[in-house]
Image 1 (cartoon, rainbow, N blue to C red):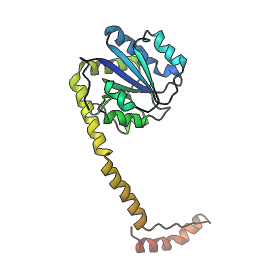
Image 2: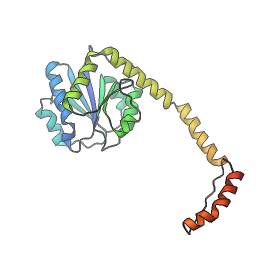
Image 3: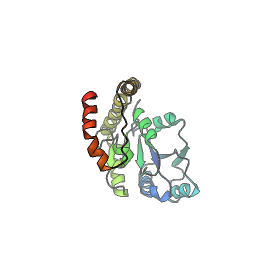
Image 4: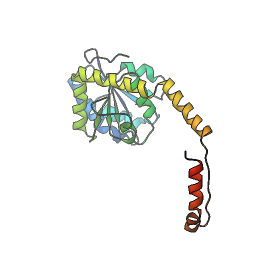
Length: 219
């Protein structure tokens, strides 16, 4: 993988929920401002859930981005889209399943800016392998986008660390070993089901029985 320098081109990917389309208005406003500053600025919208309707496309046009924006529908061929990006913005993804796209972007070494949400904070660390936004508004988003566009050292650092994290935690051999370990534990470790039907009375009477089971099967 190779992170693309903003000196070559300025292309930002967007992945997030467009239901409703106004969810992405802060990003669109920020992109419009950056497009006015640089004629090389482009946006590729990843419509991975095939939810973008005409109103969302028109929203980009109303902000003057009709010539700067393109759309990629579905989850196929993303490996060909990511190499075109300087970085990828995960913005308000809480209403859809985007984690597989996040993993692919990290594996391709694409620097990531993301809002703090359940599926992003599980794998992203602010300032280490990504930039995380506490407040998803236009000002904060603009600051983060501008920072990455003008700080190639930071972009390269985020890109490299994200790739290392994927290699470390999602390595095929490591995943296979963990899966085999789980199956081995299931097969070799006794599982005993005890059904109590009379509530607290059964529990109290059964305490010596539980103690005997624990002694015989310590694991």
